[in-house]
Length: 258
Image (cartoon, rainbow, N blue to C red; front, side):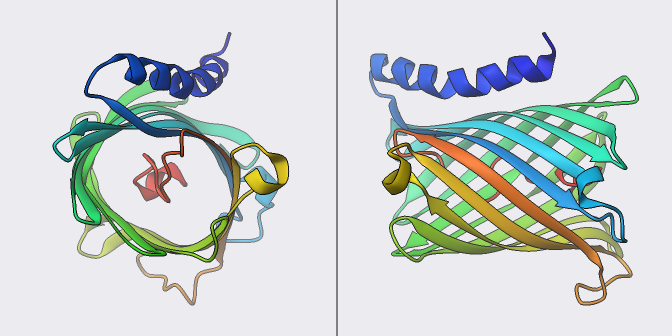
């Protein structure tokens, strides 16, 4: 069995198993889990076919409360990139995000252990930093800032911020910006707008679909001048209320374009 196939099975099993485990351990409350499969198709900044340049992202997130305002979210994930219709790279990730809640917000730390494979060579990587969220009525904000290390050496600083608004109990919209800064004048960025809709009322199953359009750009190219477009389609299955996030554990531009 290929590891990606094993990961797919794990992504379906881990949230359900973690919910059962949390119910049997005193003091730990399972807040919700979400399994998401997403496809991000882009044109490589030119007229390349979208069907030949895309990333696939699979993740299973589970969130817990430990009491005294402390909690944590754990994510198991897989990401692959197709470039000009050939596999370019793969990443397997395990992300830990402990948080502290206050009022309507949270602050936290995150550490993402990454195994990246390219040209049959495995390379350990790590992404770590801080997170924050805030909710007020239908409005929500989430953000992150950190360091991305490749093979033990500093590579870049990833930043991200997203604002969302719930139109109804089933529908929401968001705008997000991600930027990886390598030095003062060297960066990669993406600005996205998206919408999610909960199909539970139609299907009876806790399934959400998300669609987004993004503009990718980098140093020397502005948002308006860039012709690098990306379109995202994703499906999520929520367990116990879900563990929802715009970014999830993919807190870097590098997850979309290697």
